[in-house]
Image (cartoon, rainbow, N blue to C red; front, side, top):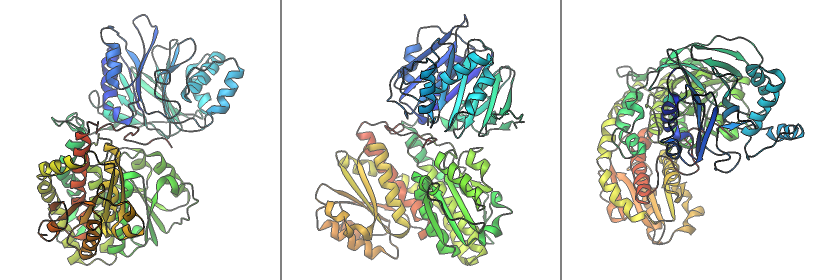
Length: 611
């Protein structure tokens, strides 16, 4: 959560900071601000409630020029979204400016001590405590870097910060613990950001900050230490990302673009990873660990949100094809419940961003207990990718829309690759392996066929714009799809929706069904098809509005439901990839017809980097 950008060099940084904030707005859009030194080396702090566009309007016509500055777009934690709580925050004199992503857990104790020292607070944020703490120690030490480093040793919680002072017009100090931060390397200029998306227009050379690290950045370079004052050497890495990949490309919304991109993202996820003749997958990121994974007594999958739903699909896959017991855990709960882990366990961490704080905390606890850790992440160079023992990149490409779409289908595809790899070491026959590979290769073409139903799905959506509730029902592999369909609708349309196993409908949810309740059934022609049809009949008898995602050769279901969306068939383990596409489009069109911002839904941010 929250977007951080910064620049120091010879150019005017104001347009670059605004541009960077726009690319990071999916991380937070409650308020935005810029801090910089003007032509006379006077600090300026301009911030607004609202989006980056509102900040840009506030700057228009003012002719600001600066070669050092920091910017922030906020997702509110401490304090409501308003101008006072917006970042940057400053000391009383306005000479020290700071932006912050994270939560300072002991801010109350620190604030009380600062008040006793004569400090006054104007905002409701924990960040204002941090800037005043640095100010207090700077006035005692008269060395900004040492003041920041010393203060961070007093801080408990998470932070990604950037700070500069009027007395040091040639440097920005940054530090990280739990919240992502990256340094961009240029010629006679350097950059900072919470995400490489903000830097890619200016440099492809980056340095990833690790936890408990602090750096001073000038236009000519940077020097890094730990906050305990140990010198460290950082490696410069090359980022392979283009501006085209993080642009809308003519689509009205990033979400629609990313839904339409799924044939290609699936091709990228499986490309070069299938050995057809052997009926097995090839995953270089797991090299050296395959036997250990195959000998695991238990596999645990931990994730949050949409990634957790992908993990549930992975549970079905792995148990069916490897005969290894699998558990799926919410990362936020896993870290706090004293999990029983051993070196015989394998724990898979799924995350689009690779920066999800709960997953990172669970990862550290898992490593402490000796279990093998695997990362399935999309963002190259992210924290989970760097800290796990081994892993597999999704290669889905950048996902900017807050509601995850192509990352989910790529996560399921990569879980299928992992299942195939380990299954062939265990109980999966070469024939079954070849069938899985054949169906994996057919997915992009089948998704393209489903996407041709976009206009049909849009017309169905028109009938449900005013719905207050939705129920999604599926069985087996399609139960997680029901959860994911409900989540998508909740996230972007603000319609209350729940996903359930279809058989559980009679154990409570059936009480909600009347003529105003839309019910979406995942009803492919599979081994439980007749059971699902019985559930459909039960809803029909109670007047519910029925939508079915069904197999393209199913003519029976048309007589049972109000609307049917026919899609191609595949093997059971890959059904979720196809069945979720119509649900993504249905949610998208309902939200658009309600006039909502599907890329930036209220109260949500793309990467959850705070608890």
